[in-house]
Length: 308
Image (cartoon, rainbow, N blue to C red):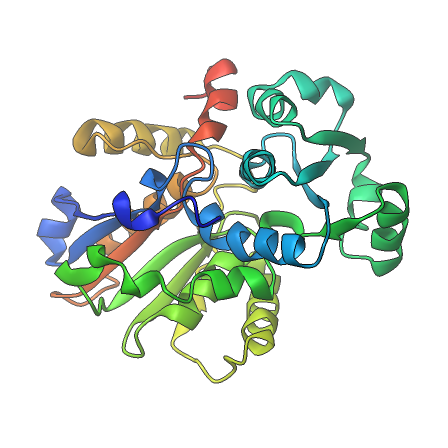
């Protein structure tokens, strides 16, 4: 996806939140959400090599997986349309979901949708299932759920070469939400050696992500990095679940900063990070960069349901 240049829009913004002043830490937000209105945030880094590889391999179709409000499927549909690659979304859920804002966009950009049961969706990493899908949709390349594979990790390789890092070339800590682990693996692989990484899984019981992230790192030859960890207490009840406290935090954050958060990923990450800072978990003088991974299109579903 060379037609999108993140250097033109991505920036690092310092957040002057009261809790940061109280605890003596410096907090910055990496505005990946500004990269592009459709392929926003981490999706640009995760998809670009997957789609370029599919095209170079002679595939004219990409199949991937996601929920009814998937940022990944939304971004894939637009990018595939722009690059002349057909796309198929294997969607967990009922056909009625096809009329939500996310999937309306995806269909408008040419994505074919196949709705499957939860039991069939669990086969999304099964090679025999992949073979059956490729038989149904000949000439296809399969990209995993969330776009998380070795090619996605490779997409983050030049992250720290962008001009926005001139204000803070070696932060003490990077913090990101985790869904499937590809973004965190990419950050760990790309970061300066002195920088630590903290991942905050947005789904309950996300400890399995440690193995998945280590596997992704091994695939790209990064197997000895130890200064990263997961915080498993930021899920707020489970994937796409919102607590009253989380909603209140997002609203207050947006009033203070004028920056919108998505409630599934970045909202939960910022809420948990805010708690950790308030609890004094970081030494005074620590320079923290939180990653805004985009996904703001997903807010529409929550707004329609009156949850934001």
